[in-house]
Length: 133
Image (cartoon, rainbow, N blue to C red; front, side, top):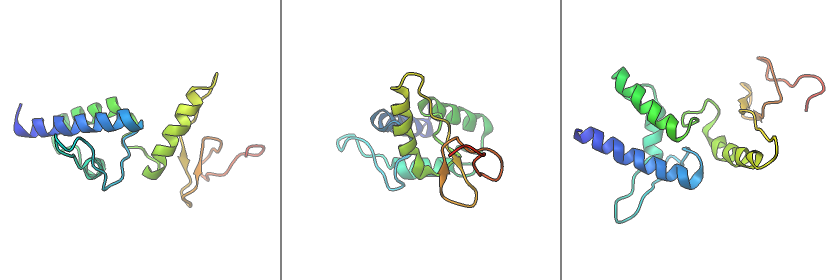
């Protein structure tokens, strides 16, 4: 294991710890995590960089491995909806899990608005079908 691998594993450990505490991998961009004695990790900037084009690396095999490791922590680590919704979505999903038969569909962004439609709307227009609210 080389120095780059050790650094990756340390950041991955910090991301796992953050996820255990918060239930998501959507820290603020300026977010840091860890123990003062062990050193804080700038996980907000790190995960932001990972979400960028080629952020997982230009080596396809390594990028695939890193993506799988992140998805094992949180399948929505690189969610298609606006990132600011992720913490709220996790809270709602956790609440739905406590209800008998409770499910929460994936959020669906409306292209012309920052408003989120929580699974009750269909079609490319993003408009709700008749009879749905």
